[in-house]
Amino acid sequence: MDEKNRILNSGLLEQYVLGLLSPKDVYLIEKHLENHPDLRQHVDALQQTMQRVLEENAIAPPPTLKDSILSEIDGLEQVKAIQEASTPPTPPRSTSWLSGLVLSLALLLAFGMYHFYQANQATASKLEALSAEHKSLQKNCNAAQAQLQAQYQFVRDPDTKHIPLRGTDLAPKALVIAYMNENNANVSIDVVDLPAAPQGKRYHLWADVDGKMLHMGDLEDASKDLQNMKFIARATSLNITLEDAGEVEEPTVSQLYVNGIV
Amino acid sequence: MKSFIIHSLENEKQIIQWLQAQDKRAISHLYDAYGGALYGLILRMVQSEEVAQDLVQDTFVKVWKNGHRYDSSKGRLFTWIINIGRNTAINAIQSKAYKNSLKNQAIENLVHSNGNGSVIHELNVNKIGLQGLVNQLEEKYRIIIDLLYFQGYTQREVEQQLGIPLGTIKSRARIALRELRKAFDHNAGVWLMIAYFFDKIW
Image 1 (tube, rainbow over the protein chains, first blue to last red):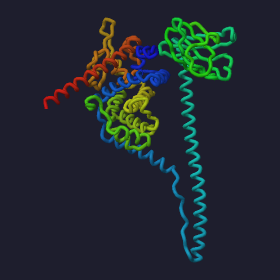
Image 2 (cartoon, rainbow over the protein chains, first blue to last red; image 1 turned 90 degrees about the vertical axis):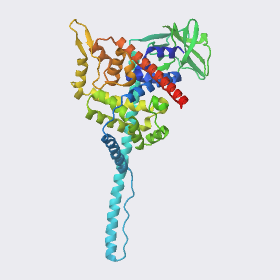
Image 3 (cartoon, rainbow over the protein chains, first blue to last red; image 1 turned 120 degrees about the horizontal axis):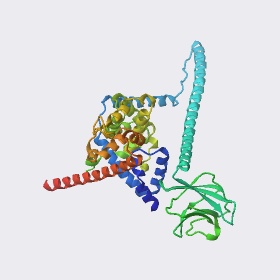
Image 4 (cartoon, each protein chain N blue to C red; image 1 turned 60 degrees about the vertical axis):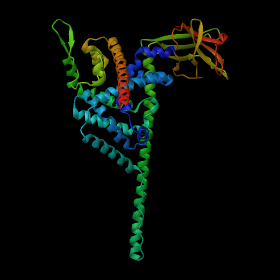
């Protein structure tokens, strides 16, 4: 509830609809919209309003533009079609010996052409496959890069607090760093040093709000990436306990491994 | 009733199917429905008919190529298309060729000193005026929508040129949009009332 109201009051949704957010913030906001359907509804209402504003200010382009667009698309479709495989040529038939010779030569030629055609097709389709693979790799690379960039910006943001969660007697050397930003209601944790959770158990993160422990999420085993957690406002401390796998209502205080003051 | 509010696509489901199959019938319908709105936006951003037409073309080709990426659970089709168009135009504006263009001069024309050291700005900031709901906004909010959305200036540029602090700009953008939504709802209500009475009379 708090996270949702914080976002509603932050003005970020209006900035999002007006196209004023950085790619990092667009990424973060869209995550929030996935998690809160009523925020998505609010955004949709604003987008509907902008649609009206844009339609009221429509200007008809010259009639030639539509043809130009459809022609360009036709051209692109044809390029695709040419790259697709078509049927190879078939050799001719004849009866006399001269025709037989011609036939043999024609057949030789035909098979030669066929062979080269096939080789060419194979190369062309290999090229296309490589190109597709390259595009897909590039897409993955871009996506990974965008995500890293977003995380990096988040950590560098002056409004993002760095909260070290230090080990208790159970694990004195343990360390987890929490990054919390109240402006965009985001919190992520970086597991620097935490003993591996035994089989059937998981670590859980809790926020202490007025003496009550509120659940922020559970930790993925052996993840070296920043892990996104649920933001809870007015937390005075953050705490990680080791629990049995599955749903957990209350933290097991004796299993407190790390904590830190906000 | 919907036609008084915004242009709703007939057979939108069919169009989305065509879009995802890269069937250019989608583009033909989408151009008819949304081409004008897109052109109106981009023309105001780049201030050149030729450039705007090229950018509208680029946009629809991108829409055709990337149709399979549109996810209706993430937002409206109109918004998706407009965002592609707006980003295409912003990239064009920020390219080197545009650095010393008309666009930069336009914002300078806005701002001139009144001799006492304070700054005032023009009322009609856009060479192509705006119509409809936006004109129901107070001037200080309308200018924000005009400059930030329809002309593609960044908030920092507006801050620097008009001397309005960034925080004020952001909060005005937010209020502008909320006021627009109120006007939108009010308008829809008025039409409903008119339709209701019209119905009663006939």
